[in-house]
Amino acid sequence: MSILDQNIPSEYWNAIITNDASYDGIFFYGVKTTNIYCRPSCKSKEPRMENVVIFHDQDDAVHNQFRPCKRCRPDLFIHPNEEILNELVEWIDHHYHESITLEKLTSISNISPFHLQRMFTLSKKMSPLHYINKIRLEKATSFLLNTDKSITAIGMEVGFSNSSYFSTFFKKETGFTPVMFRNNHKKK
Image (cartoon, rainbow, N blue to C red; front, side):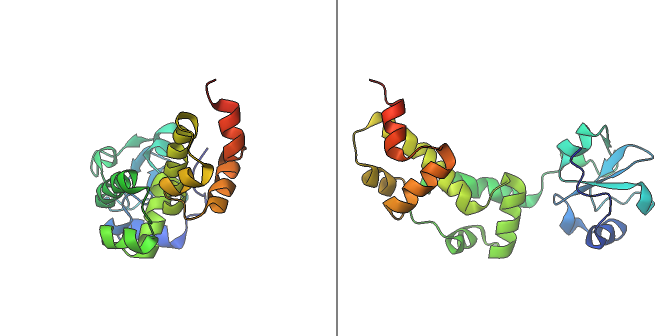
């Protein structure tokens, strides 16, 4: 069961009882007596705290046999930040080879560094930097198998700032150094 916590954080409870829309998309809450889940901004009758469970996302609620509220329609909800994140991810996917910093991402998205980091991690289950490096890793594995370029050249081409960091990240994620990966996977 991936319910956040049976003890509801006071911040979340306050969002529920004040119908705070700024928490929409950050969590959903379900009412055990009705098996209905809502957005924090739902204007339905205030539930009793002991009947409330908190969910990471809608999939958690559905997995736990809760159905969407007909009043706040959490199943139709797209957080405005999700659109911004999708645009940001698309930008990263096209610019992965460039030097990308959190400051660069915040200037593109017009979101504070703290909020961007939090939103990205909640949505993608990884930090922006980790996501960027995963994209770079995908590109690097393709280059390793399809070119004879040096490991250093491939690392630099996909955006890693130095070959040591590239090799370390590559090994951590794949279990192989780039050279081992190339030798084990390259078509002969």
